[in-house]
Length: 213
Image (cartoon, rainbow, N blue to C red; front, side, top):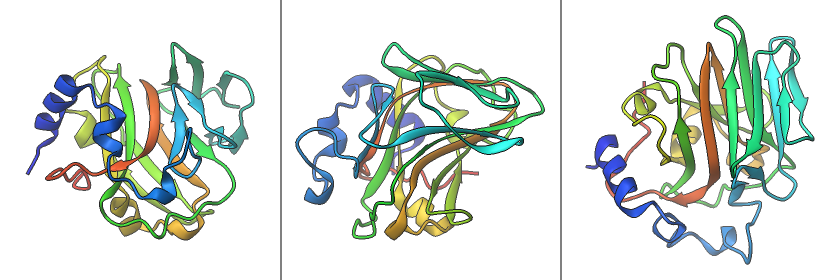
């Protein structure tokens, strides 16, 4: 069984090319160019008709049309530069969320070998509040994984790809026959991260990142 730390070592050696993670993906999610079925963020920009949305306690649905944005009560902000989506939670007390939303897709035919792979770079030294990753299927339908135990052991200011199995979200309540938000990240408290790519990938043999607290 691979641990998170051993996975980090593999990431550093291989740089986790798409060949390593995407080999063996079902044909329905593979296409010429980035398909919206399997790719949601590419080099910091949303793919096809997927759209970035900010949310905070004043308004949970704030669609974004520019390459930078600030939520209504200033809880969370983002900018897209250096081929990455840079996200900052700005307040100790305010809660904020950033998500990718769009027309429904169905991933119900995929099996437990497929993961949501997130290429992430964490700048904040210590996560003091829960950081929740969700895949949603129309409010209140969603499954959520808390990432703290994974991110706590990751090196800071390095790019690492985390492949979270889809079954983690399915077990938590995601209905993959009507997925309208393949990525949503919610937190409270000051936090800075960057995300380069979000896509479907094969779960590496022996790695189980569902077991988070």
